Length: 346
Ligand SMILES: [Mg+2]
Image 1 (tube, protein in one colour):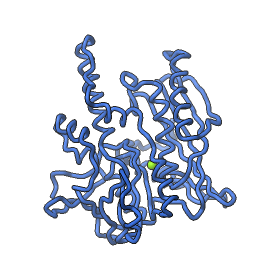
Image 2 (cartoon, helix red, strand yellow):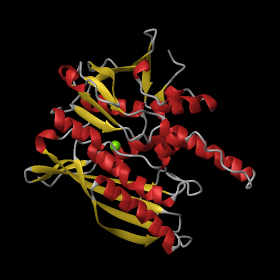
Image 3 (cartoon, protein in one colour):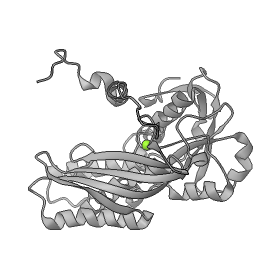
Image 4 (cartoon, helix red, strand yellow):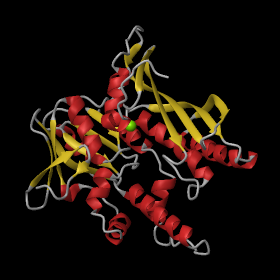
C-alpha cells in the first residue's frame, strides 16, 4: 500500500517524535505564516493583530468513553480544550469550526445533546460556531474542533521566551482530571462485573467535573491585561506538568527548578490518590487534562502576582544546560523526565 517498504512502529517515535518527523518537510511559502507547528496555536499575520489557529481531535475509545462521558459534557470539553490553546498564546478565542464523525448508533437526539454542549461552551466563552463537516464514521464518534482567536502582536506568548531567573507560575490545581478518570474507570469495572451496581461517585464531584467538563483559563488572560503583565513564555497543561515544563525549557533553551511543596494539588485529588495508592505528585506531574496555564514572568513582576487567588509560583528558570529539576522539602533534587516525574529516582 505504501511505497516505503520498511515498517517502523508509531510507538517507536512517540507522539512528539512523530510530529517532528511529519512536519520536518513543511515549507513556509506564505509571508503571513509567522509560526506553524510547534506551539499551542499557529500564528498568522492579520493586519494589526495576529490570528491564532488551533485544532484538536477527540476519538471515542481513545480520548473518551461513552459509558461514562455524558454527550453534552463531551461537546463542551471538545470546544474548551481548543480554546485553552488560544489562551495559552495570550489570545482571545473568537470562532470555532466543528467536524463530527457519527456512527449509525447515534440518534438525532444524541447528536443534539453533543451540540447542546458545544453551544454551551460557545456561550460561556463568547465564541461563534462558524462551520464544519459532518460525516459517517465506522469507528465510533469522532469530534474535531478548530479554534481561531486573535492577539495583539506585542502580547503574543510563545512556548519559547523564558529567561534565566524568570518565575514559573501555574493557575489552579493539578492532577484532578486524572484522578477523576481513575474513579470513572473503577466504577466502570465494578459495573461490568455487576450491572446492578450503583456507581459510587459521592464525594468526587470536583475531580469528576475536572475530567468530564473542564474549563479554560480565560481569567488569567484578563488578569494579564489588567495588571499589564507580559508572560515571557506560556503553554497549557494538557499532558501533565512535567511534559509542559520540558516543552518550555526546550523551546526557550533554559533549565528549570520547581519546588515539590509548591505544586498545587486539591485535597480531593490528594485524598483520592491515597485511596488509589497513587502518589498525588505523580498525578499532578504526569496526569494531564488539567487545562491550567503554565507560564513564566520576569522576577521583577513578582509584586504584581501577589494576592491573586488560584495563582501559584512553583519555581524559577535556570540557565541552559542545567536541566529540569524538582526539589523536595529536604532540598533533594530529582530530574523531571518526559515520562513525568520519577518519584523513586533521587
Ligand atoms: Mg496546548
